[in-house]
Amino acid sequence: MSAVSLKGVTKQFSAGVVALDGIDLDVEPGEFVSLIGPSGYGKSTLLRIIGDLTKPTAGTAQVNGKPADRARRDHEYGIVFQDAVLYDWRTVAKNISLPLELLRWSRGRRNARVKDMLELVELTGFEGHHPWQLSGGMQQRVSIARALSFSPTLLLMDEPFGALDEMTRERLNSELLRIWQETSSTVVFVTHSIPEAVFLSTRVVVMSARPGRVAGVVDVDLPQPRTSTTREEPRFFELVTQVREQLAAAGAPLGETQEPALVEEPL
Amino acid sequence: MNTIVQPMPRSVGRQIGRTALDWFPALAVFAIGIGAWQGLVTAFHVQEFLLPRPTSIAHAFWMQKSALWSEGIYTFKEALGGYALGSGLGIAVALVFAAWRPLAGAFMPYAVAANAIPIIAFAPIMNNWFGLLNPFSKMAIAAVLCFFPVMINTLRGLTSVHPSSIELMQSYAAGRLSLFRRVRIPNSLPYMFTGLKVATVLSMIGAIVGEYFGGPIHALGVKILNDSSYGNFTDAWAGIVMASLLGIVFYAVVALAERLTTSWHPSARAFQTE
Image 1: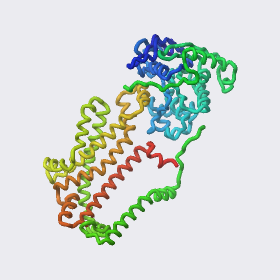
Image 2: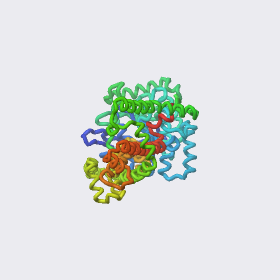
Image 3: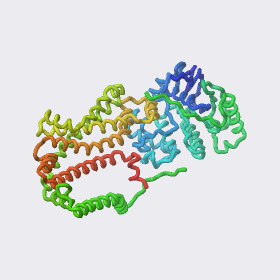
Image 4: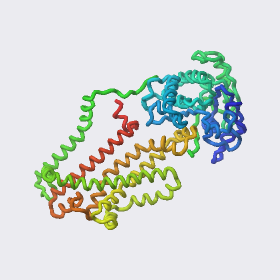
């Protein structure tokens, strides 16, 4: 059973813009799949369809063999946005335990899990801090801890490190790989950074824009565990070049792959 | 990269010193203002009934302090009743509007219209409805004044939630009630307190304006009106000082409540970090 299964997923916005056109994609359990593409909205929209935060105009999305809406209600996935989306009125510990509260875990169980999660993202000692007392990178680690707190099998990430500086981003990339392996979860990761996609993924899905289609898939055969030296290997550069060429073939202006995300009005 | 802004431990002595320093400009302005008033009134021999000297007002205040206190408290109770009523209703209506947006569209124009009521015209009507001596007639006037700023600010706080926050709660399949309890209501608190602070002073004004159109003899507004009509302007000024003091204390209490409940908000952070 696939972790994520998309069949003919099409999304047309009311303005007539076709964001996605007939996307077929299967993600197997334990995979780390990156979606990379020239425009901001197609990839993010696809991620939101997997998470049942927006409905496709046509086609079906399944998570762990269930329809996406059922999977969302069963808490099959955790999500991380570009902004950490932490609540200022909650401490770090309380932010991490938010989904556990909603799942009606007992206080003792919540506290024990928060402690484990803080250890996982290496923020032990910061449980009593408020989000605004943390740096951007630390905030995003809290956000990851929250997404994984209830042990979902699938982690959806929407350009989670896009707003961070390069050094913090590379460090968090390595941390994310460690967390991915320790929790043996499946990750679907949206990014507009080619090196980031190659470094993290087992598979990179290259998307074209307007309409959004799967333009190509690059299997990343770099050995695990990947370290900072991985970025210096010839094979790494070959794969980066491969992704870049596929992006260029898909019509992406090189060097400029980011566009403001088009998000639907909240319900 | 692990840089972090920690709340700095600070000695109590330094804290007090700093607080005193923070207050110094305001106190200096107060002293200079009162001094100038006193000096100018004395130098130009301004008649007492036009503008009494601050020392005369202070003397009048001191001589009548127990009467002023009981009159002030009577009026303050009216203001407080109206404040509770108007603010409570304002918060409730904001919650209903935020939960059912079409309702807000249908009723918002009338809320705006209610806010446009000239309170001076409204006061005699309330006195007629509930009776001159019934404190509820003054509470109703204060309530009408308090309702709108509390409602409009609370509503803004409830609705100005970042779309990602809502998506996050959706991803956890959280219900509407949960979204309100965990996101919308905490998000609205700083906005709500802005309205609640404005309403403190408005409620005092409402109660006193109501008393101008008739009320029991032991009410502050009636006292100020009577003193003015008998030409005892210094005593009227003492009444005004009492009204202002009560308004300031009321405001300060609500501001303190705000500080305690929304210590996480950016506006309060200055007090926690250097």
